[in-house]
Length: 585
Image (cartoon, rainbow, N blue to C red; front, side, top):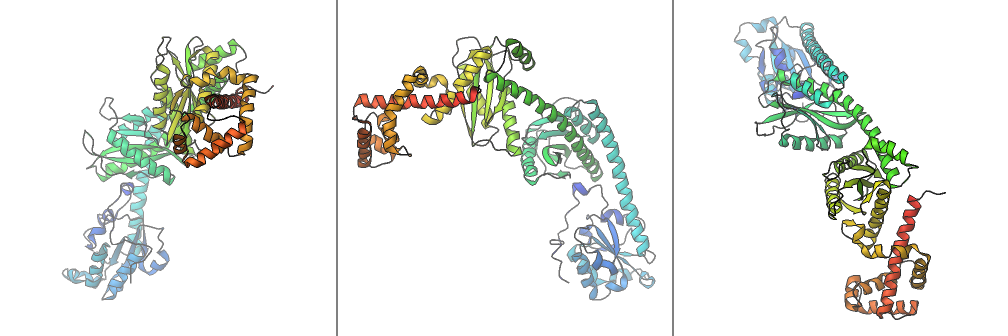
């Protein structure tokens, strides 16, 4: 019989896995007195796991690929002659892990008859790596099935008892509220090897070295766990511990035995113990229990910490939003909330606005990374005594950072560069950072935020550097009062309106004249910048001159259009910010 398609690769029975180390293998069964010294073929497959026993007569009903670990019991008459090889193939095709054959009394004597018994079945079992054992006449199905069931249940009971003991020990640690490091210490103590807890971003939450002193987590292991966490996150997580490939560390090679930490079915981290490469099966089985129980209780602690953290982040975010929008009704309200968040009203602050590209999506992994970027921004080095505050506002990250009182004008730019690096290290893509001028107290912070938002909006329009300050756009700073005045806005409308009416909705004429002005009136350079033919550019410039009623080749006309464009740009940015920052009456 051909090998069943439901069990491909049955010829290559893998060695016992770490996750099956606490179960009963065929080797364990054959070590029992009733089955000892009975194996005659298929020795290479004895590491397979046995879970239940069934008779050969009911093999067709028992052949279910979801019911792994079947041990088949058969009478010797079914395997005599050439048909014995077909029976072995049928057993393998059904997914069985061993074939136990009960001999007749006549087969038991003389002893040398066993060496010549069932040659066809033996050859097939060796080829398919199916353990085949010849049992004494008294080993009927009832006796063998009772033996398998007793062995499996006894082992399962032992595992459950040990799991309960581990769970109680770690549960007592959890009940004390001492946090994830204490849980890692408990796991390391019970496992006798180092223990690690990392989140899905590869950040080490706890490390216990198991040597009685604090040491850094092995960087090589952390990198392996980070790569594995991406696999777990993509697959949605699982509940079983697995052994990863050995990892070389300065202290020697270790085998990470890893289990995912999940909250509500969503993976959120990994728990690992670092075994020696020559760890025994019994020790590995116990450590697997420690890792799996530890992952459950670490998940409970993470949930508690997440709840507290999210509440704190919402409170801090609300404070930052009210602060940068200037929404405090009086000084007492500000002081009451500022004390909780470490905001010092007498300190000087600069506000930075970070705009990720691409924009932050709503999926859980991206949101988690954005929150990690905010926490990283709060940990950057700075000169002030107050802490850095960061919060998400819309799709942007707003950072309120204290600055020194000295004349160092490069400090805000250095902070902006550090924030950009911290954010980009945790988010895919790039980030544009804009910052305002430093200001004192809540009023100065709100003004710095408005300047940062203005610089961010202008930077998109004029293609500024990725890190830009409000003072970098000096021409717009100089035109701020003009753009805020009615005369300035009317001037911009009167100059640009005829051009835009002639242009329609695509504003191609406006882009042509701005490129022409940017190239100092050089027609050929403007054509190259626009990617147009020289004659096409000249034709469009003539249309511009007719539309505005002035010769665009005149330097005075070019300055007039340039000024009107900048005033209009700044006015539109200010109008958008006014609509956002100034609440309706």
